[in-house]
Length: 177
Length: 169
Image 1 (cartoon, each protein chain N blue to C red):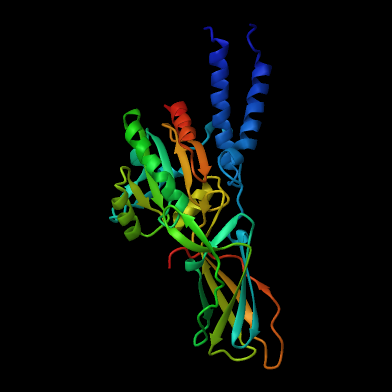
Image 2 (spheres, each protein chain N blue to C red):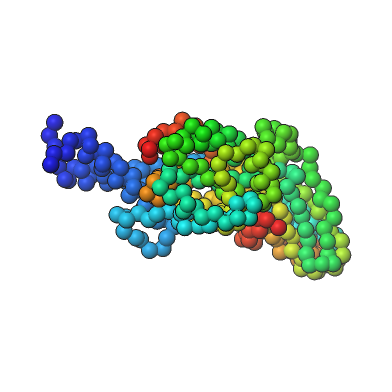
């Protein structure tokens, strides 16, 4: 079998990113786990209510490229980036990209805002637990917006504290496609 | 081009892991202070009828005026209306004009129903953001104070106890 250098290097780079993501993720854990089996994000194990109170498991979107955005109606920078997420959701739906919001907020405010905005992706109600979750995802400071991009295999490909730029997000999505 | 050997590849992988891990924090967003350090709260009792509340807001951070709430416990001790300084107008696309505070914010808070020498708890709710483009959830901070006995001067300044976060009350 012959493997050409560019392919080999690409594979190494990919592996290294996976390793780094795993290492970074594991920082918050007391015991080191094997870096070769970087874990599926705990995000995929959680269930949160939607604004109507119906439980929604994040795992229902497993296999898609997931953009999970922690936000709140009281967070101006969060509101600022949401129209861009809606635009990309519309444009990338066919490519298996799924945006999911997790609101650190109360259900009534979220329902109202989502309806005003005509939000075209689901948003769940996180509250206090959601901020703790963001901590377990490798962010030590609990602030919003906070976005986690999960690849098709369920591993964290990118975490972002603060707003994402459209070209940056597009480039990440392109890499994961 | 010669095929890279195992050792070279291992080195390359190692270098990339280190570089990626090192840059991960910055690549993924700004470096930020935890909320209780970005908005440091302390207070002192001026006498049995008033408390001086201080927020030391770190550079590049700001607090919203209309998100500030103060309580004094235990009942029947209660806080009166805080004397909030004018603050600075802050404009954002979504909330329009709001008043914010930067730097040192000093608020005089009248209290009623307390006895000199009594131990009270100041409970302050606040919410703020960083210029870097993130906002912190509403936070609740507490300061344990002993009111001065009659004739004594103001109490020493006490820092907030480590935060216990009550986001949605």
